[in-house]
Length: 236
Image (cartoon, rainbow, N blue to C red; front, side):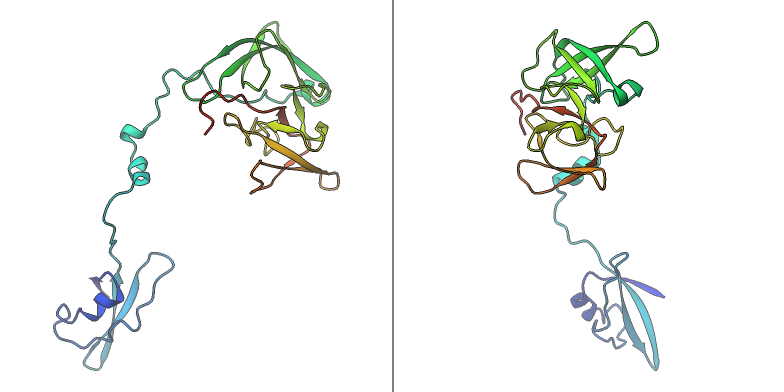
């Protein structure tokens, strides 16, 4: 099978000079392929019909910004001064059945986030030492404030609870999509979602953003933070 670099069916009809004067069907059998964007054109050479693979050549005039970002170079993120990932505490036996107590020791700025971060210190459940976690600062947080994470935590702003413990209509942030992913929805500065309903039959809850464009569903034991993330200048 011969290959021709022809852009469109119209160009296929003008390829008689490339074929040495043999008659062509004028691109009437040109078909776009759903796999690679190529097509076929039949060429009559005497009594023999030869198929020619027609390659579609890109007609793009310029490289758009998204394509330049894909190459990397100057668009690579600068991660030197980042403090670490912001996420909920890893779910353990204490959070599943009771609660864990933490203290906000510091509020810091991370160049990779639009909202400030809080350094929360917990006691290690098995060893005599402390654990530090980075949470995105919700509203009305301050240093030396005590927060609670777990099933039996009180319904107070900045506490971390499972979805089934939250009443309908409450504003929440950093919601887990799957159990243990430590936060997937409503993670940017000033963002939040609203608890719409709880379905005990399927053991899921439905939440939606303020725009109401897309609803999300998560398991009842997924963790979240009550209240809206603090917006610090950049709320995009």
